[in-house]
Length: 406
Image 1 (cartoon, rainbow, N blue to C red):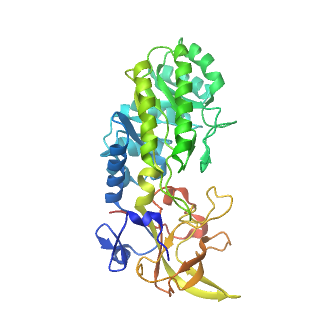
Image 2 (image 1 turned 45 degrees about the vertical axis):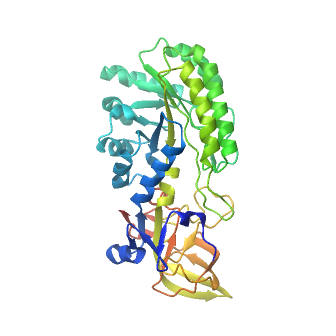
Image 3 (image 1 turned 90 degrees about the horizontal axis):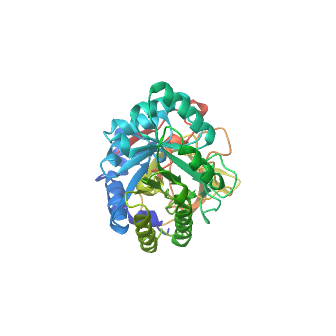
């Protein structure tokens, strides 16, 4: 069985996958299954490697939505320059880390009035997603006697090609259409707000440096065109992230060197035009995705009309993304391994399913694995982002999995 690119980060000792200095079965003995394990060493190394590759002066922000586990968020707070949140709960988790309020931004459509109140009272930067949201914010700020620090989220007219999920390039609930921004900037010049800058996020989960460079070039071109209408000084620019990790067969890790080289050129241009502007890259999956492993135990082995099924105690209710039901049009397998038997060759083709009463509850389809029995473990790699918190944990009333930061 060929090894997935994600395994290049992990330690395999005596034929077993090790996390946090111990084999996976050690943690299963302590916490049972199903179980999410996050390797803090890999997160720390990923942030350090990214900082080393990128030009100096880039602010790295963690998108809490990728994995809001409190212990993991606290670890990231010691490694990054700031955080982006998308709900009151995420905001409270970010504030609990001790990060300065000025290092936290609150984005996302549909912010409730009570969330705007919390953000205003906390002093964090509010990323405005629509003219209507701006109107509500002004009303609430006036009631509280606050001058809100804001940034405008731009819905760009271009799409980031080869992205797992597009966040621009057409009608969107995210941000304000770029063609409406100049008029809005002139209006904002007369309003009681502290306009800091812009947030532009074109797409996510991209493994092509070429397409990421093209998107970043388009972002900086637009910012340059908007500067003549910008009231005051541009002090904050969040260009999002979009950096992907390999999930599926044939995918290769993103090459950072050409992306960093192009970004350095854009950064120099920005320094000339807005010397006091903080340039932010906001990343979630890229920082934590490869550090997570989801572990389940086989509770039944069965054959049906010539097909072998391994039935586990985990499934789509705990890892919706691996089941293919979180954005995949055509289902593809996440990398699934037998963590206790990494030195065994593949012997059979199996389909790994969970305990739910739905044919959608599939963790892997027709995957080559060693011959496994009831009681053995299976592990889904690349599970550090959009796993636990992005899954329908209440479906069919199964208990939630344990999460552990190692």
